[in-house]
Length: 494
Ligand code: BES
Ligand code: MN
Ligand code: ZN
Image (cartoon, rainbow, N blue to C red):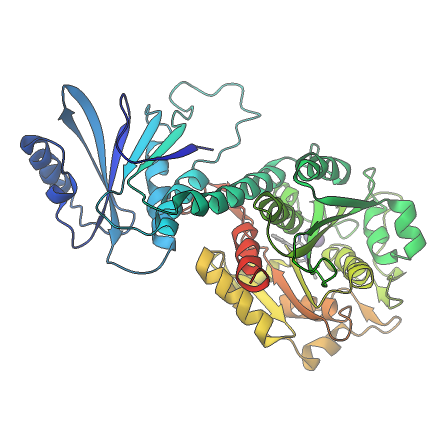
């Protein structure tokens, strides 16, 4: 990702210059400091490109800057508004344009715009987030495909920028970590190596780590979780990471739980070959809570947080569980495994029971790439949210709007819940396709203990993008990191 710094004046040497402009701004005024012919050229070039300063639109030109050919990008901010996300989008558009342009340094000059520190930091955040790539396995990138842009300098950001940036930089660290975990193939990141990578990142940050192996999980009676893992050569783990930054160290923590199926073949209820490779990112929920923990600990959040990643690989094998098997969860409730491909709820239910008994949380949020049906409902614009508490649902929805990791609330209810009743056991893990995301959420709700405010975020449509977005390229989006960071900052750090 880009190296970001802030300065009072434009630096010396080679760089591309970006000038953000509101839709009502006059371009030539924003180009103060250049010669009159240069200003006029840039303004006419922008006109010729039909640049109307729409949000994230870019007009590019070269002007003579004291003898050097200076690339100048006018970037639109749209109409004046208080929405922080517009700065991130403008920043993202700039790096998307310049990443492989040959430019190594970008200077964004916001002098005269009178931005507050969060807006200026947001510009840099968007630029850095959009510059993320993972080229580890590309040994033959051509010269012109290689990213060149490495550095960003924001000029004229004003007071308070350092603090605002410290927060953004922590979120970027988390985003980087999540995207890396999600991008890595399943032969590289599997339960044991997921745990190792978290240890490497978390221990230097002072995050306490606890890992349950299979033997420990057997002792606790996590039959649902273990049933999913038993068909794989890769041993399952339950990873708990604890950051106790709150003023009251004994206050109940916020518990975050992530589905970490490092590969989902479907098991014996095997998935079709077409597209199965995408199931390497079935650990996107665990990736998001790990990245959020990284962000929160990096910025030393003043809150008590526990992140639990429930890690397993869902494989077909002689030892794999069968459709029709009955397993006993840690809660004591029994489950008929109708479909081994509905494995996410099986691992999550035991993680939920364990986390509630271990930490006595008042608030518990799980994130999971739980159902294909969620993508049918909401596409790739909103994650689905299910909650037993209106206040909690509102807090999460607000954090989602503020960060762009948007959430849309879905229903729960008895009529859906009873669909999950089984003939032979307390419940089954899969029913008809109708309302599939809702019945999955109802299954999870059966494991929420009295008095616990709970939300389930089905992020199946959000973890991976087939086309570039404002703040990410195709691939891992890092969805959930900014959301959870903001959710904690706005509601638990007062
Ligand atoms: N990991 C999948 C859900 C999924 C599908 C996420 C596509 C992202 C993209 C989950 O484990 C699964 O297989 N769910 C089944 C549940 C069904 C068997 C009740 C599904 O959605 O088909
Ligand atoms: Mn599955
Ligand atoms: Zn799955």
